[in-house]
Length: 408
Image (cartoon, rainbow, N blue to C red):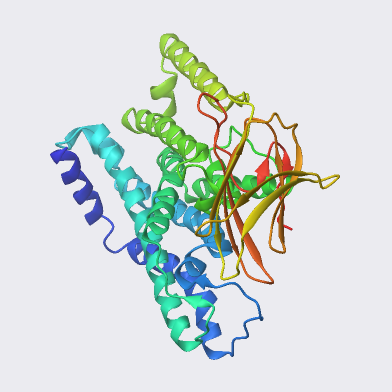
């Protein structure tokens, strides 16, 4: 470990004069500055009835966070991985590995760690500048709906999730940059990866074999409040691709070429083919959907109401004939409703005050709902909690069993 840290320090010294550290900080600050700076010099109009919101979460999250993770972070990773690899290419580092006092594995891992550090610096810059811009906007355009509430847990979870999301892409881009001497190949393959995600979003499909797919998953579900666990399947897939491409990149790097690494003789070709088949099979089984098996016949719904309005009870009705299914009192802005009845899978109405939520549910479902609303607006965060003993994987967002859960 000590030698690895020393090697990382040596690789870090090679970054001097490349300007990549400044690029990481500037790219992180880019979106917050572009979004907020022009608005400082213009009057702000907040529509009547707008829900109160945290200026920090508004600055960090939402569409701004989507664009940062989807476009800016991959761009930094492409540039950083290539600049680090180009240092070896230009200085004939591959031929000088034998003269180094550390192992080839430590050399390669140190390069990957530097790419990750630069990515983390960019993420940190984004968070810091977002918070700074939010504070400035709060005092330049004061309004009663803006709150200086800083949710540390939400911020840390979002930060960690972004860091894990890019681990697989960083390993892939370093592998490509090491394999090909020309910058154009690294940039082209990285651009194709982003383009594949754009195509997936347009077609509303998920390509399980796409190493860049974690970016697409993040775009679809950037808000951790809609996730059962903030480290979801897409983050685990990022770790899977990280291991795969670290192994491929290391073998390619240490043996100085594709043929030496995977096809030097028939035995090596057979081993490489077997490892490829095993990796493809593992990927296939990891991506297989788990069947939903209910462990109970009833339904449980828990929730909180973040509002200044007086709400006495929450009622549940069938969507078609508006037949009452159940009701529960609201105590301290929270409610909990459980039924042992075997209800058919269908649309049901959750009603409280003048608000409605159409929810698709059936026997065995558990829900955790958070409502934030006033007289005119409502925001809903939905988590699906599987019954103990069920192998239902964590779902995200407002989708449930193929049906969109829409607020009314």
